[in-house]
Image (cartoon, rainbow, N blue to C red; front, side, top):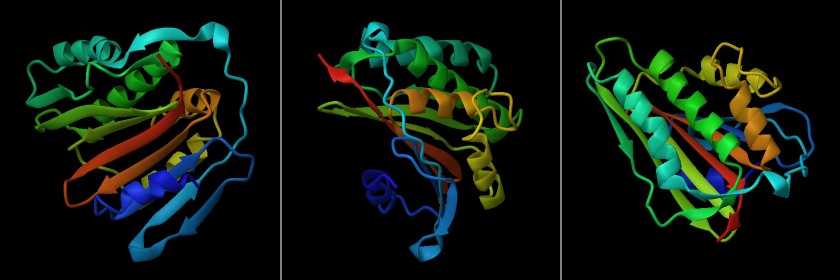
Length: 203
């Protein structure tokens, strides 16, 4: 299991944790953790990132394109869309894959996190440390029950986003970028937090 993701979870007081590490070869497994946490991991080796697909990326600008479309969709709803990514985060990476991940997560949040008249926040943040890009996607919607989080493990085995939560493409793209992903359902803040790490080339 990705140790940095497990360590970061200690600071947000989650009641449910689902971690999916996609950079080593192993079988799917579900295991209990301390303090009432549950971790569901899916490990699968992938070292086939193609350098021909890498582009110069300003992550704030890339996210803004996605979030601007979301803002237009929810302009009549009390949902605040926040791009919390610093403009200095620039690197070489796979823009199409990152775009697909942002699209799937925002769509999942709108469909499953908020009912029509719900108010709340959708926010994306990121940090870059050497060749590891860490992204946090957070909403203050209705979150997911433990059973729903564990259902996501089944989706990690699928290559397409045609499953219940539409997250198949998220797992597929993160695996192709040798990454790891973690879902945290924070009961205290009434929302779902998704942290994922991917390999990039710093500028």
